[in-house]
Image (cartoon, rainbow, N blue to C red; front, side):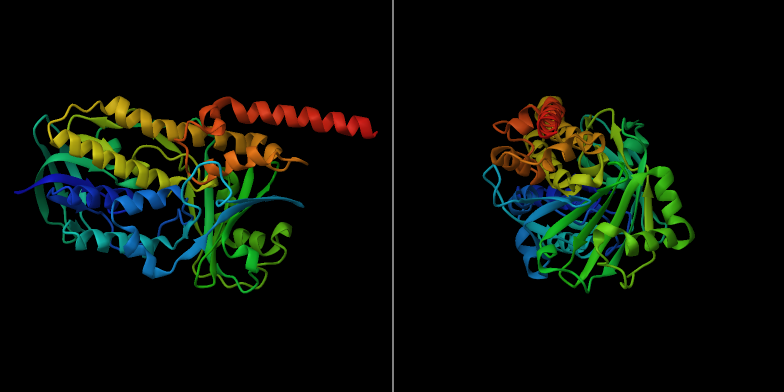
Length: 415
């Protein structure tokens, strides 16, 4: 039976960041990944904050030669209304750009770089059973040929993403409070891409804030285009190989014919009911990171940033634990990660309620407010000096109410 210091489940961004950091601390680390890489994944628009995590894990340098599309901001649009955020003009001091990536290439390179650091990375290995205890953790898994194996570890980091290995095995999942939604998407050739559309993700709101479209440009001239909406709407758009989705993208007025004649790189795919949480993020002998903890919604592209943030922090806490230090997993890990999740939860709620759009599409938006919101959009959701982080649960609806009252008063004066 193989014995290691740390077993990481999943070779995505959370798992590779965690494994690379722990390897740098001198631990014997093994990754078990269910799928074969490269594999398709959404979550293609990163946030600047995650560049800090990739750098600290020693992985950013491996990504740079791939020449992914540089992302310098985000643009929100609704009809003729438009609001752009540029990361160089934000409240928090931090990274002012990041990448927009094809996840198959991005994740494969992360796994390759992690393996080069000395981590044992194993693909097509499905975890079938886990037994945790105070001193050792026993994991059973099957390889690509169906052969059974057992591995013993001092600690487990579950970064299995949508696979949610330990939440599933230990019955830790809990339902999301959000309305069940889904997404249907594909990659399209983008011959009509404007220069200003090259460095930003474009988000188009429609259907009274209940639905929206993302357009994420890649450096090879293609663009990821997805529609997010209520589950029933997405199911209808995805029927018959996504024919309604294709028709909608080609004719959606706010895209101004950008994809009218575009070829689709693959048949549209759909993900339904993606929002989910957990009852706890850690337990005896294990910790959860990435989408194994909680996934909210793709609207603000927070998925990879939470993956790298939680991967890095879980590794740091694991290091302390294995060094014999007392670790308060609830306070020092779960509450920290939950704080960031709760900030974005407020913004997701504000998006679908319309409060976020009321603020960013206001006739006059205060520049200080815009910079503070920009830092949230850049992923700096742990900066308590930012009022739009510290007061996240009340500031959006309060400000939106004030703006509505002010604009109504102005309309009354004019009439």
